[in-house]
Length: 201
Image 1 (tube, rainbow, N blue to C red):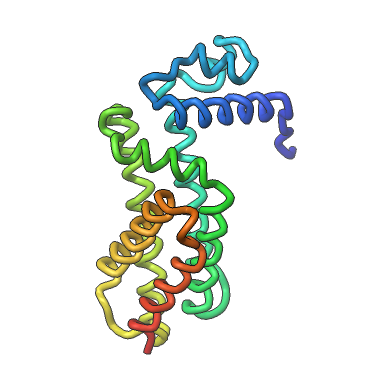
Image 2: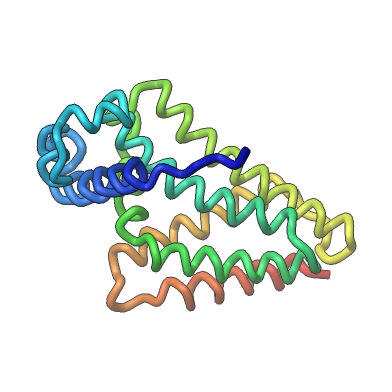
């Protein structure tokens, strides 16, 4: 039997997440209360606890939404069709599109990431870190496949995965600080083209 969706539940989750995103962005995590989030979502405080056990749990759900989207894009590229070079090029474009579609989430992710040991308990900090490990591993596997197929020259796939994520994250920060002056889409495509050209056979 197919799983039945609950539109009321989904609507309430969306209301709560949107309210939390606005308040965490404006006030910060520690200056935002569950009561304020409930009021902003036009729901009772108790309703939030039907979905999340704590403010930390709610904040982590916002962070994990964005990280899961990034991870899915990289894993899709790894399991896709076509050459590794083609899949990597498509991946870069899709990541840039995600940046523009979810800018508020990205901004909040960076706020939380910079101070995650202060905001999140060890349990949640480890969960956040696990996403980055999986992203690096998925990129490493894609690079290794490119080498096996003879598309890419011999490199240290693990180190290259760190480099690629580091470049993307550096551009994220520059773009969030200089949105008027920098096109994240153009910058990401240009720099990744240069990196790809350096390792192509």
